[in-house]
Length: 280
Image (tube, rainbow, N blue to C red; front, top):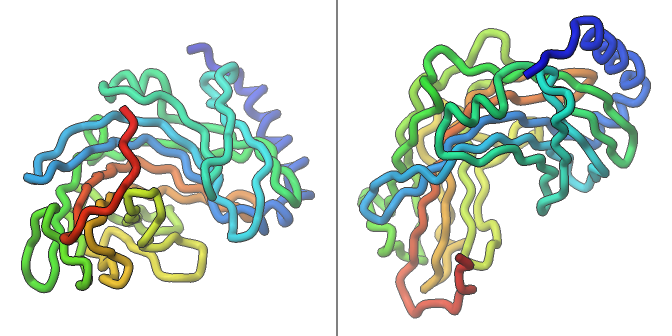
């Protein structure tokens, strides 16, 4: 891919630090953080086997609670003609790149390097916020999958035999190389989310910059309250382990990440609920 000239890149950065600075305080009031990442997605079967779903390139503009992102684009300084558009997906604002099985193909389509976020919020605009994504030396092609276990009390459970009236502990193997790099504002991160079969979020381990608790590489388990589980319901839990190379630009933090996500389905005992039929 043809590279943009150094002069053009310098102009982009000049525009970013100049035109964006006047509105950056307003934008920072709307945006919690940005995410730029390459992700390996795995499904874990009821017998604990892991299978690759795909590799995915994704970017996110995470709004603060009650704030609105209006529009946004993402470009690579190595391929300025390739523009990804952001769009709203629930409470998130996402731009999707390739979904492929071969990690080499993902890196070819979305090479490591500098990317530029431009976006408008309800309060202002940010032009060309730079975020650099780089694979760490301890990651091969993509991060390895993390096996997840479910337990209640001290007993490890089958994913088809979860009791609805007891806390459920979700545990995982640590992704190799999780740490805190010296120039990052955050430790490497872990996110745990759980959804019922209707798509309702029943548990979330928290996010940085919101003022509440969240998980890092030092954590190895998360508890889903038994009060959030109902009988006969199918659920999906996601464990994401993510490197976190964090920089703040004009008040807005960005997280460049290589991440692995493990998806596990489980069922609570009791008469089966009438869940929506899965689309093929």
